[in-house]
Image 1 (cartoon, rainbow, N blue to C red):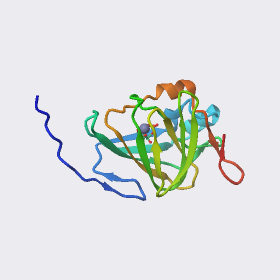
Image 2 (image 1 turned 60 degrees about the vertical axis):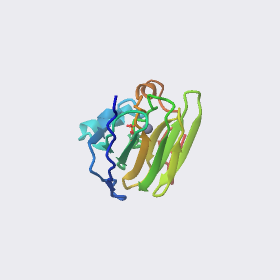
Image 3 (image 1 turned 90 degrees about the vertical axis):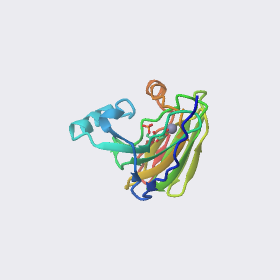
Length: 186
Ligand code: S6P
Ligand code: ZN
């Protein structure tokens, strides 16, 4: 069998906005897509009734989902909160657990929360220029703690896939809430 080699390509990434051109997929997640993720479900339903705002968007350039490939994407996580909990992503493990990921902060500020199925826990602040390494087997979720969109670029293995079910069932072992002066991480 002959494997057809891929053609090299270049993309243009606008650091401030996270715009990635060209991209082949765009995922938009609204508050209603995050039911069960936030502690205050009454506040969530009130927001859904009040226009169901967009929480984040992911722009991705798709390549074959196979070993050897790398997928590039940007996430634009908007500023906002559900009750006193900052807007955040759903969070996931990679379906193929032995796959890592690199995040590069582009603008805004937030946290990268991580956990393992064995109870491991980690959190790192992120802003423009932060390079964060997500090792294999660590679930990851990002949180926007600022007033501007929190934008980051990510590269992950083509075969990784996403497992959202485990987080939906077990929840995440950390939350980031609005404090009087600064975000409170618990
Ligand atoms: C993909 C990578 C990110 C997230 C994105 C949205 O492996 O970690 O591109 O997909 O930040 O988060 P989530 O948890 O909804 O996929
Ligand atoms: Zn990931």
